[in-house]
Figure 1 (tube, rainbow, N blue to C red):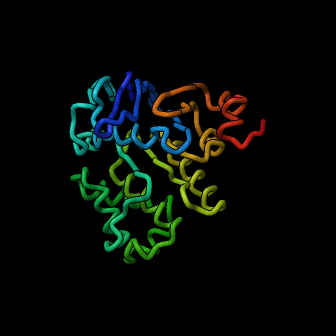
Figure 2 (cartoon, rainbow, N blue to C red):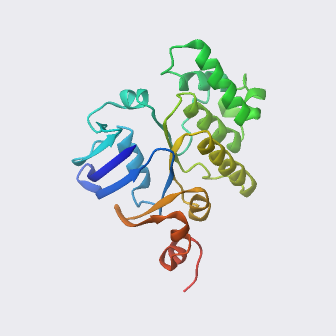
Length: 236
């Protein structure tokens, strides 16, 4: 589904991605783990068209993404749920969800998708008329994911969905991610909680200082001593 070939990305004169290559197959959940500043979020922003690679290519079902503007990428079914939620706080829950459906022209389909979002997150229906800024942190994360789902993604990119959440809410978010995958949505997940991410993933990549340093099945990465020591709380 997604093929990234040796992309180099810069912020000004500073190179943040150095020859990054990865693949995501249809129906997979692939996770990208690594420490802060490794380049994980930059990778998602580049796929989304918010950043342009200086070298290399990004293809989605054989079509070049690195030449398209972000709104065209969304129309193809590649949808990014960003780190920090990025909600419109002064708008209601329902209004935020409607903004997520910007790619939909069929009102009936939009309402059907919103009902599916409410089935995943019943609390959002209860909070429908509240401003997004009045929601709890966990509810805001649910709304951010729900807004992304309103675009009917074929490839959903989730950036740090558990960031700042209490442990019980983290468990709920990952349960929802499993449900979304079970519905047939392909997922590329960026997550600092490496153990949780590898538990739900099919495959994983480990990033360090802008490079992919390891790639393997998620179960193999969970049992890899290098990964355990660096990212899973292992000891020397």
